[in-house]
Every structure is written in C-alpha cells, then in structure tokens.
Length: 337
Image: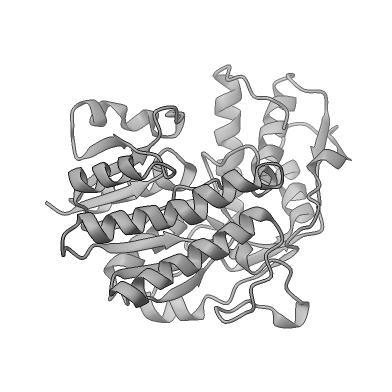
C-alpha cells in the first residue's frame, strides 16, 4: 500500500492534510509528532489511530537525527509532506536559535535520513517553505512571483529561506524528487491562536460568551494579505506530489482574495452577535518588522497542476469563527493572546 508521511500532523495544516488523504486516497497515512504534541487537532482521528485504520502516529523530533532515521526506516514512505516547523513568526523574535535549528537543520536532518536510510528508494518529497521568505516587497513587485528577491523580515522568515534552499539543494545535488512551496496566508478551523485572524475570532467568541470584556486587542492592521483556506491548501499539496512532480521545482501557492488585516477584522466583527466590541492596539502584538505586502502570483503552480482555490474568504472566516465558538462553548481555557 502507498504510504504518506506527514511531519507535523498535529498542526492545522497537517491535520487537514491527513483528513484529505484519508478521504480521497487509499494511502496509509503516517503522522510524525513529538511525544508532547497536543492532539486536539487530530482528536477525531484517534479511534482510527487506535484501530490502526490507515492512520498511524510515529514519534520523532526534528532536532534528533536518530529519531528521524528510525522513523524513515519504519515508515519507508512513498510521499513525504514536510510541514513540521517552529511556525510562529512572532515567537521567532524571542526564540531565534530554536527557530533556525528546527526549521533549517531539521529539514536537512530529515532529507539526509531519507537519502541514506531509504537505500535507493525515491519518495516524492514536499518541503513547505513560506511566503514569508519574500518579506518586505516593494508595491511595484506585486503580485509576487517565484523569482522575486528574498527579503525576510523575521528569524522565522530567515529560517524558511534556509528550508527552501535546503530542499532545492537536495534535489539538485542528490537527484531526490524534492519540491518546495511558498504558501501565502492560509487559515481556517484549527488555526493556532497566535495568528492574527485566529486570535481575532477567538476573542470575538470569548466576548460573545462573556469570558472577555468587549475589547478586542490587535497588532498591525495595515498589512495587505491574500487569503486562502487551509482545505484548499492541502488539496494543492496533494496535487503537488501527484500531478507530474518535477524535482527541484518551487511554487507560490495562495488565494485570490486580498484585503488588509483590518478589513479582515471588520468582516469577522460583522459576523458577531455583539455590536459593542471596541478595537484596541496592543503594542505587545506588534512585530519589530513586518511583511506588509503578501500578494502572490500563482500562475506557475496553476499552469502545472490545474489547481485553483474553491473556498471563499467569507466561508473561511465564518468557519474559523464557528470553530472558536465551539471551543469556547466546550469550556476550553483560552488565554488572551
């Protein structure tokens, strides 16, 4: 049976990718996670995991080469989706060395394990970089294509430049079928609350439930983003590795609807049952430097695979808000961050 390995299966994207592969393929899905990884996002899969019904967890750590080799030796994947990372840009300002080690060296350790342990097998590998590699882009460079100069604006973005280049190096140097993606802003249910749109939705849900005063705290609202849904993103990742994969290629992937973070917030507020919510800037939520223009040119990926986003911005935001309403109603403890 075809085997897919998803590193970081417990994250938002990893969990949705597992759902997509289980629903649309007959593959076995192996999900890498750390022993301490929260299982909230894959709670619905635990009965299948316990029954060994096409989905399995395997414990490994990107900073532990021995565990990665053991994982590859056991799974022997046909497809690898490398999503695991220290993925929070804001956190990278306070933990830059952890971010660089996990994202750059962790990717190198994984690819080295795949190269040496697979013993001649040639899995198709997706290395997930980020649109953050482009960082601060001049307005006349919009929309951003694959050849735009990297100008990373955070330690996280720098780490993803390294991730991108390491992936392409292994394709060119060792003939491995590795492709890298620069996914632009994508969100939806299960989005971590350290990201702007998710913390806004969480705060609205908490205010509606009377668990927070009607003051919604924000960071930079001027950043221009192109939004896509995580469920469209994982569909793109599946197509990436199955529609004529080309070793060493790199693609921008993203949505088609663009608006500022402030406009996104106003739309979320329009969905609220409360009309007394005031918006307050929280200096602690502002980054030292920000990637403020994130609008992609996805023509290369679309031409190669035929992929296009299908889920509207409005649906994505409504589903995100409903996700947080459900969490709050269930009594989850949600810190205000």
